[in-house]
Length: 510
Image (cartoon, rainbow, N blue to C red; front, top):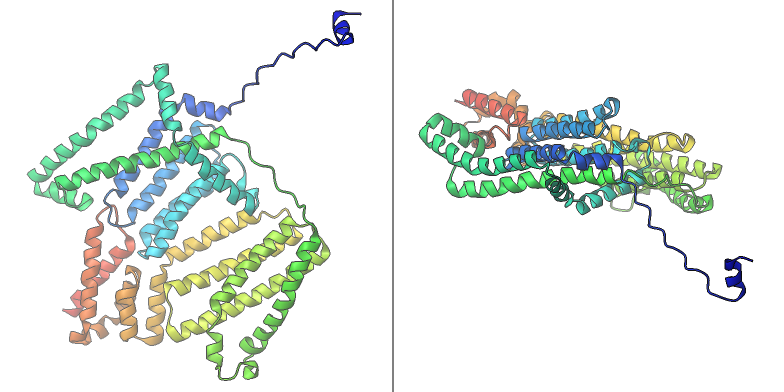
């Protein structure tokens, strides 16, 4: 009997187990490359931040600067992915074109709502591009993409200190000379440029006019504020871009695809209850709204009043139905009964969308067309496409619904933005109602510069009104003022065309 057996036999305590050292956590190769090549990525991030500051510090409005920013973001992303070994031409071309077109749409239209949506779309597209560089998110489902996007935003926030840690590592390693030299050069260049540009602007009137056109009034107090803004406008985008690269390269693992686990009876129960309600509602729509049978209307309500109410409620219900159909066919076990109910809900949803569209068209016919009403009709069209794709996935589960939705949304939005909705609304209202006080007030005070071009066919009528044309004179003055205040960075094609229209109107009026 060996000693170990003897120890056990006599009740002696077993020998303590030796604790093995924890295995070192494997670091992703791309994160190692980001850290070792930190000088390259830091300079790239600073360059992107400097471009952002140059384009938006004291900028009057969105315009050409947004298009240039989109191009700079696309170029920086391509360079970063290329350095990390993640560039793929077939995949990246979609995101590159999307960013550039979104930026150009901002410089093409002067409608603030359209510009803001496109500007937000640039950053969303950049976020999705970084996600797609590490995984094929176009094959994911909606839930995974949304949750993955929020997780990435959270990781970016937690990695905001990563650039400083990597910079400190470069300093400890003695390889910081290039980055330190560039940073020191930037620190020296900012006050030096301010002094030199101030002196040259005061020495030469032409150069001073150019500086004033680009940056506005050049004064000491304003310059101090400009320098402070420039520092923040440079550092914040640089930190966010580098932190996004750090967050993605540090975690290349993604959660597994979700599987159906819920019983089909759950979905059959709530979709069946909805189907009964929708059947009754759609029957009323067919009988009253589409067929024009007014006998079922409440006492005292006219057909016009009935047709113009409830639009936004129906739009909201249609959106809820699309979400329910996508969720039901993804999160519950498939069955023939469930598929039949989902198809029935789809038909009812299409009837609701048709009812919403008809109500909106009646409303437009009575009160005119606006950009927001065009946007609602645009959203109905997009919703119809997504609904058709969703019901297609009921029978073809391998169909990539998110990819279809992304491409359809991007394409339809670009068509909407480049079409200049204010111009469409102005032409429609002028063609329907002519040049009256209502259309005059809408174009002068409610629409953007996109609508000014619609007045060209009415120059003779406007000039013939004599003193009654003061509104248009004020309008032309405001258009010219806006064009001059925008400068080079805020240049907008729509405002430029409106300015040309205003000049032609003044020539015709005088």
